[in-house]
Amino acid sequence: MSTAAIDLAGIKKSFGDKLVVNELSFTVARGECFGLLGPNGAGKSTTARMILGMMSPDAGDIRVLGEPVPSRARWARKRLGVVPQFDNLELEFTVRENLLVFGRYFGMGARKIESLIPSLLDFARLESKAGTRVSELSGGMKRRLTLARALINDPDLLVMDEPTTGLDPHARHLIWERLRSLLARGKTILLTTHFMEEAERLCDRLCVLENGIKIAEGKPHVLIEEQIGCSVIEIYGGNPQELCALIRPFARHLEISGETVFCYAPEPEQVLAQLRGRVGLRLMQRPPNLEDVFLRLTGREMEK
Amino acid sequence: MGEGYAAAMPANAYNWVAVWLRNCLAWRKVALASILGNLADPITNMFGLGFGLGMIVGRVDGTSYISFLAAGMVATGAMTAATFETMYAAFARMETKRTWEAILSTQLTLGDIILGELAWAASKAVLAGTAIGVVAAVLGYAPWTSILCAMPTIALTGLAFASLAMVVISLAPTYDYFVFYQMLVITPMVFLCGAVFPVSQMPSSFQHLAALLPLAHAVELIRPMMLGRATPDIGVHIGALCIYTVLPFFVSTALFRRRLMR
Image 1: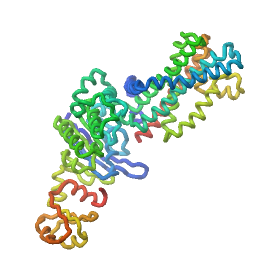
Image 2: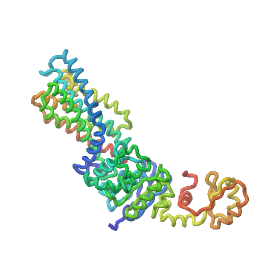
Image 3: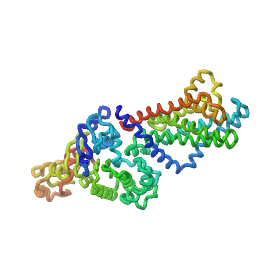
Image 4: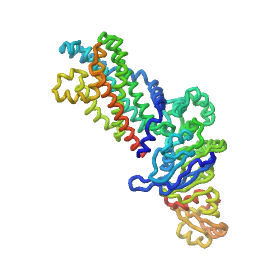
């Protein structure tokens, strides 16, 4: 059991003549939460699909829970839980029926599944919804049911493709809290996301993809320290070019995104002193976060 | 490709049952409407053609026209039920409802799913074919025991037509394409294969064509059973339906792999 949960080596994948994943390698240790970050179209979902054996790489080796994929993907999937990007629950079935049907795909008997359902519903905070049709559930409840469904075979590894996309903040925080409790139980999680907050809160390590290429890998706080390593001041409401000229001597790095200037300053007081007294400016000083790293690496203008 | 194709084959002889049970659960929620739908069309045909046309036609093949037609309607009903279940319901599960995608994230393979869908469509065919047979038996146009004897053949007919329809849905970009298969393949078969009049009435070239079509073999098997006669060439007909089941299964598995797991 000392082998890695996921081991990717030199993966390449093209669709037609478009290279979607290029020479991607990373290793996910057992028990860790590993994030795959990148803008839309970076190759995250393609990578996740290859890990599940639902798509074959053009070159490179994939091992999931010690099994070579895709040739023995079925054996790997026995010990895997999947939360797909788009819900594919059975809408006309009840919550209980969804779990029953899904458990049978893993070769489990009805009695065994029935015995697991209460704890799964409890975990997903859906105790009172067992007999409710899925089409009547809210978006957050559906996601939690998808998560509960992914746990029916008590998997060692969870692969989640953008698990909180489209959820309101309340529902998102509940999912994060549930995921942390899974990590506490020793599960391994591979998470693709473009929410930096999600990655920063959950991931032990992460890898940033852009155009199918790995552009950074490491622990979130280490990446933040390495890539930014100083305070960030966001400045709104002035002429960005003019402001940049004014504060450039005191900034390590400056970036303009639309109307906003991002100033990375080791000594923010000096920058603030320069701007004091100028009318119409709004300033926000804050510690650096993963979003700064991400935008620094992938370019401010690329992504919302 | 070879290795990937092998990995897409059914993993064992029983995984498909989970897919069958899933479809059965979904069907149970709409069972009554489904059964009525299955019955209405062939029964209308049987009464309309049987009584109406039967008056003019008189006896066919040494039996009343309605008895002759009843067997044809059982075979046709099985064909239609399996074809439509696959073309519309299975296509929806593959494409719009993402049911197959969910199943593919479990230990089941693509082949397991297709096998489960085929078995389910065949079950619907048995239901539809048997229901028509029961109506015929109630009215005294077929012996009760013959319905029981015909059930395995009805199931095989369902498997063959479900398997053929699988190839169609593996290639069809949208629902709109199904109407071509229905108009150009399914409907002509009803008239070419001896379901409503004997094949021997057609020009010989059409008779040769009919000998290749799956519905003709289904009719040749089911009609003697329902009329209480011996079935000539029983092995040939069963063999033909088996070929129509097995070959499209392998073809559609390859095509689905290309479509869903490229």
